[in-house]
Length: 178
Image 1 (cartoon, rainbow, N blue to C red):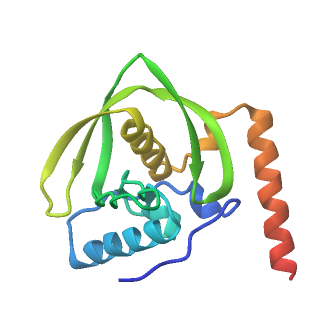
Image 2 (cartoon, rainbow, N blue to C red):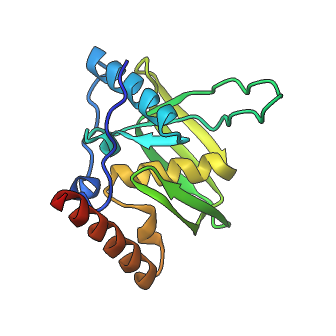
Image 3 (cartoon, helix red, strand yellow):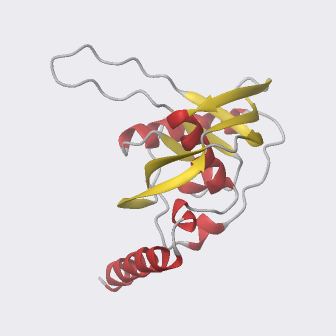
């Protein structure tokens, strides 16, 4: 399909709340295909539609990692979540280092519920509910946050958040002046 440009911090588009998808149309299926192409090219393990400038509640995830040289390739495991909604979260907390394709080359540890249940629609328009833990739970929460205009840096201290926001604003000013 097509690799689309990523929206990068400090672009205010990242703070938009995404609209629900009313039905899985051919346009939504093309969006999903473009999202996978963009995510794999980046490379990343998750992408929300807003990260390519489309304010629709669509998330793509693939936790398969490339195999080390000389080993069998790990098969891709693409997953699509349309209108995902967290319906339950555990009291137990996990800490994972997170990064974001919209905040390139910046990583921090973030605390999130260790287990969640998510209700969503698949690419065929069917309703599902999934229980997730570990990296899948973290990735789903990270991407669902994007749909609500929340970035992973919002889970950090004010000082760290301001520092990274200022750094990306400075880079954006430098690039627009060039």
